[in-house]
Length: 291
Ligand code: A3P
Image 1 (tube, protein in one colour):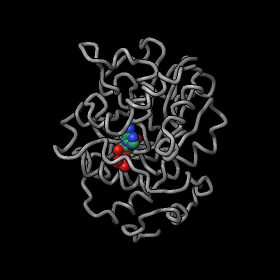
Image 2 (tube, rainbow, N blue to C red):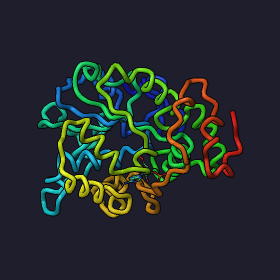
Image 3 (cartoon, helix red, strand yellow):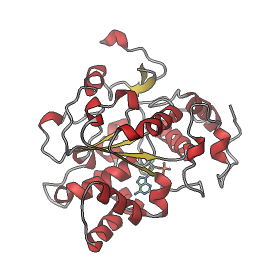
């Protein structure tokens, strides 16, 4: 197994055309996921990193595991309530986890458990690649399991080539959008969630077949605000796994959308020109490089 691993840069190793993190992702576990047995009531929130994963994990926790988020000895971190399929840092026995199982995942379409084509529900969240690039840039510098890259323009070239954590944003979004009809899927964008959080929570709960009264929805919206989540150590991966991160910084960082318009589906293709995404940007200044 060791032989399969070669380091492309500090901490990253190639896996099926993308880059994952040594010590976090294990080839054997990743290989097993394709055949991971899915149940009819499983829910998986899929994202490219920095697109609203934690936010969605938090909303799913409130929808399904609210009793385990309250004060007391029963309080669990959301990475345990809605774990990332591929990390399993906590070594949870996913096969014996009681229903309803809620997961998150950054897996590209080609590596997703095949059972999801027959059973279970998926929520795909996409975020405009400019904000993702900026956010991922900060993450690469904030975590100490990856090589730091202080120059954003150099990082951006790597991002555009897919030479960053989790590979190409373009491939991830384009593949999922092209094949989404093959799954029972709700697709949302981070920008949708920012513009109308309540609407997003309603769409998610309707999709999952939950009939919630207005007050319950309001409570979920109030609890999943950026401010509340930032203050909740159970929501913060950097608080849960301090060894992986620098002291300064926060996994929940700024929480803004710089694109004024909705996610532009016309820009999602493998041949996409990054400029397509920049047209609507309010802040073009730091992006000098166009491939
Ligand atoms: P920024 O770095 O732009 O602030 P992920 O969880 O997929 O890694 O995404 C992380 C991004 O989501 C970060 O973006 C983070 O601040 C933002 N985020 C997390 N919780 C949020 C919330 N409740 N509201 C808005 N943005 C949130």
